[in-house]
Image 1 (cartoon, rainbow, N blue to C red):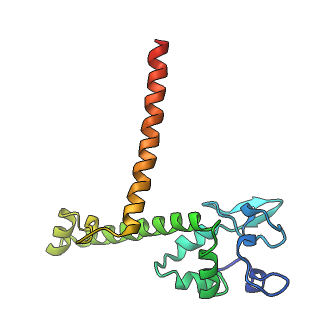
Image 2 (image 1 turned 180 degrees about the horizontal axis):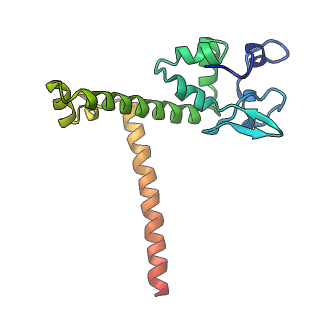
Length: 170
């Protein structure tokens, strides 16, 4: 994979690793912006900004180590970026999408082998990819489920209000 920037561009004038200012969307100092947070590369003022999300997903490393070495200044730079409050929501979305992509690839691989492999066929039939761990759910799992339920509840509330307004107009 060819990277359209140099490692030196990932540092500010004092030699410190860039974090928020690397991204066009945060709009700190356009001279330092190297990436977009969009799904695809973005052209802005006749300059192409590669999508860091696209690079992250293309490398497809669930440990994120190879991504940090190839696309950033290394592991420490990546950890610092991951701790950034503005970047965290994007990062979680990327991690979720990578997990789904890797599971999908794994399932497709198992499906291609299932004709000759009884265990692979059994795993598919039992929905082996959808197993939850034994025991009490972690705090993170509880929070994730609560967030999903909240979003669903908000959507349902909005639907009920819309239906009530429609019923009054009829």
